[in-house]
Length: 406
Image (cartoon, rainbow, N blue to C red; front, side):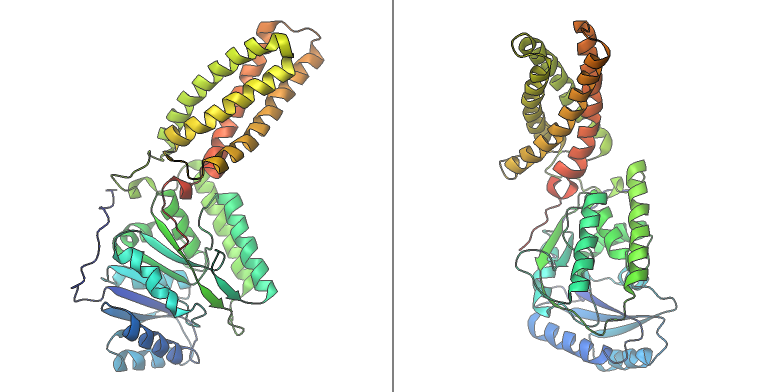
């Protein structure tokens, strides 16, 4: 798969629609007309480029198709797309795939998200600064009105994503997103889900590909009449997380072809990172052994191990931050070192435990045996450290996805 072209800004003299806002609907005869007219008025009054509104009706069985067709006939910027199968993800996939607008977006039909955030959402995509933009209800500056049940479910879902898939974006399921068309053309064929997990899968693939995800805090008011089946949606999301997790574990998530040429950070491919991490780890291991041998006589084995590992851990984190994961400057350095020390604690437990077991089995083990056991334990700790570095200390978002909370 070829690399994505470099980001370019959309011309101010673009005559065709610059923005296509998709409104996916299923049996929304009550909400559809007032919401579309409100969206249309807002865009007419505030959006400085040509736009289109696409109502993506996915297999409605009520009066939604007739209302959508009438709106498309009355509003020159509106059109209607009729699909035969249910599923928000399928509706977005179909509508975005056929659109020729440079920027594609979608909003939920209930317009729970305040439309004043729409221009800040799409502006970084029009300018070429970012690849994807999402509304977030969980970032500082967002204002959210909803019941405690949905609040807890939303926060638990996003915590689950962070802990299992190590994502950097803050809110996967807010129905307020946009993407550049050139990016969507590459991402959409890779997204398997056609339901509510569509958003999450799209974002995970984009983030793992090093694409820039822009976040906009939004004002959001829960729709009390929402008919989303929370239980079935949650189960489908869990299945989606498990599927993506398996792909990540096997290294089969198809992200390599999406990486942008000319990036300003070190390649985040697994093979390249392993080579760099291995080189840093080899130097760290030699340094660890030398420090241990130097500190062992005056301090004893446990103290020598702890001190040598601590010194090497700080140096190792700094080196991997720059060389393996391509991060430069002081931004986030203290946070990275703090997380690195937590990873160090895991390594210390592993190596100290190995040393304790050796001394329990052999009262006075030979020095070469002692060092051999520590080297083996340190290698195991190094592998674990790489996994934690990649997924937690230096996750994809911090390695150049360019996410902002503006």
